[in-house]
Image (cartoon, rainbow, N blue to C red):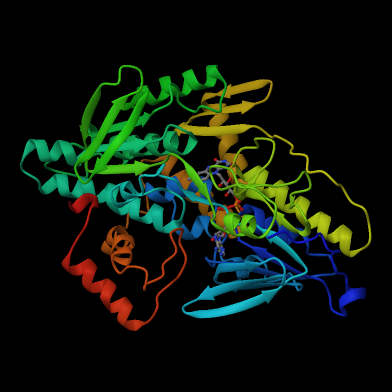
Length: 484
Ligand SMILES: Cc1cc2nc3c(=O)[nH]c(=O)nc-3n(C[C@H](O)[C@H](O)[C@H](O)COP(=O)(O)OP(=O)(O)OC[C@H]3O[C@@H](n4cnc5c(N)ncnc54)[C@H](O)[C@@H]3O)c2cc1C
């Protein structure tokens, strides 16, 4: 269905202040809301989590350096002094472009939110490239739940190895495979290696954590594909130095509780890697809200479900609807925080200009500030356009940049302290691992569609009986993970 590009209402035509609804409290949504602080509008930010998640540091939660609270401050708290903004917790389940409403869902309660301007910033989830069954044994890393599950699985594997007696079983438990050698996979593999070699030293009596195998594999022929060749080589070398086995041109064709089947992309030969812990850091799929927009307008979505927006980040025929961040596809821009932040701010500026009758900038122009990936303590690579930076300097820059973008003074202070403890010393303070973290996701999935739970970290339980059912499943039938 195509809707005409009707004029965007202002307070003169509606009698109320223009209502801006923002979907998502990630980089795109939150920075858009903050940008509208002084605009003559009412902002409603609807998100399925109550926090703003700093995804780039999820791997540090998964490996015990940071606690989840340090990278996920409450959105309500961040916006508490912004009088024109309110926060609604709920998963958006419908967008009606002709009625100009969205519907959110929380614990069985549906709420409709009318809008005059809409910013859709619902991000992306993990893609298993059509093999969603892999997710049972190889969690992705997109949400706080994912990071805590991974922490439980990683630490649980060492615990299981300590009590195992069969050497083959110990080898399986002490083999960690990270699939996907992009920045997330590289960072994750590096941290598991450091956890095993530094933090867990002297913690066990029957096993030597140093002997853990950490394998980073990818079907691509290089690590960090978006980076320059020199930096890719540097990162590869550094990974090898800290004991990460890098296997490239290796495509995962099967994955189960005991390991993975891998096919060599050049020779076609297949082999098996026996490993208890698998982590999926390859592939993203944009929020299904993009498909919902495509059903109701002339906009198209690409293979990853991203919305092919116009140069002003709106969708055809709907100057009032913006799509930003990981959900949008424009000029091959990457799915990184800066694209989401700058896109969110651009959309907010366009809305503020429309409301105040000004023209404003018509085209979104991305300012590329460069890319960074950290490999280990004291070593990172930074691609800054004309300049390549490696080693300690890149690592120090990485720390600084991440501190700047962590929202909230308290989070910055606590994070700095945690980094001092972990990087100067050997300790990692956040090593709590609970059964709920490891089994919760799969137990919820076993309850089926009646127990609506968001794949990327939302709240969702139909009623108390369902909650009890989940507990029964988790108690009686452990599945996957370190225990299998
Ligand atoms: C592990 C990891 C490491 C990364 N490292 C880096 C890095 O080092 N540097 C970098 O620049 N980028 C990095 N990125 C990418 C960066 O985090 C993303 O590009 C950025 O978060 C995108 O912002 P966004 O607002 O589009 O989406 P997100 O930040 O994902 O936010 C989406 C929001 O929408 C909400 N939402 C989703 N669906 C719904 C729904 N149906 N209803 C209501 N709310 C919904 C979510 O709860 C969330 O609040 C990393 C990403 C990951 C996963």
